[in-house]
Length: 221
Image 1: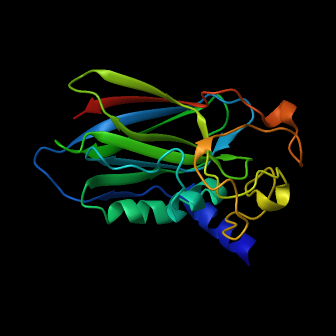
Image 2: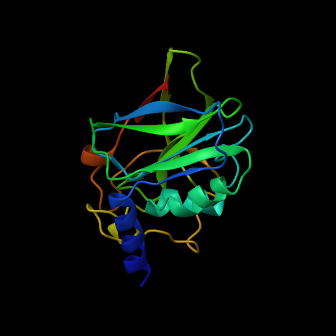
């Protein structure tokens, strides 16, 4: 049942994009955001994007991942994290970029923002990994007509052991389970150590060197 539920959630996210706006403002505007997958053998699951005030954070490196981030990192499920952000009055808008983003490919989305809500966060799982993800964590968007560019390493949520076994990795490559809340892990968010070929994933095909994602952000009317 766990595997079926994971696929149902992932399938829904692969075919639908959502945007929730916390407050309609006469000063609202948009960011146009382009994400490029820089890895060679990893795809990105649906990408959650949020605009918010300074101080909102998806995670703290060296501290345990919250359960909502762990669900995203282990199974690609953006819904719990989007709901958590949507309930925060310091968050202006959230949107999910649907589909899988293959290596070397880019995708562009627009997300609402407003004066005072000019910071951007985003996250998506890397598959096939146990609990790897890329993220921007509260970066400040550009002013005026300027464009800002950011790069993200691969992070490890530390919520699931990196056994590299397909039985515990969802998605088209492995078809295993997603979330494994009782399996433990390192216990804190850290830079991912990559794929070492200890399970079902050949390192020659699935390993990477950081950064794994490039994100370009520009403000548009």
